[in-house]
Length: 137
Image 1 (cartoon, helix red, strand yellow):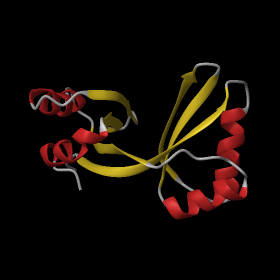
Image 2: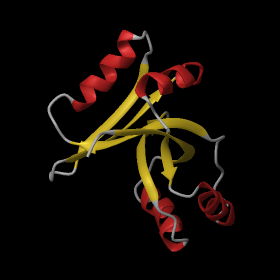
Image 3: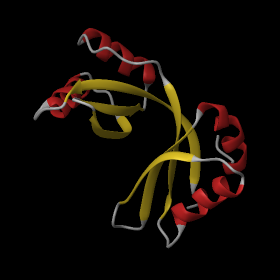
Image 4: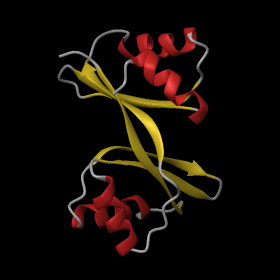
């Protein structure tokens, strides 16, 4: 299977940087039967930021609102999925770098069975151009 790259919406959530907060947030989504395509979390000052990529943004926002979780404005990132091979992510980053587009963050993982996935961020001003370069849908 070829590598696919698509633009997807994501939402930032700020939570206290303490044990159990990620589980609490994901429990809300589990109870609402909201599936995630990706997530990443990291400390940000004295809090933590969790970026969530829902499969269904409408259901996600409804669940978050019902739980009283404050969402930041939606943003866009690239979701990459494909067959794992040496240099798969390097090729993508090289295309963007050659075009002068800075990747502000990237997370990638393999499933150990021959597939990989990645999420990558570029600045909003570069999103349309990066999308064309990568052939994102």
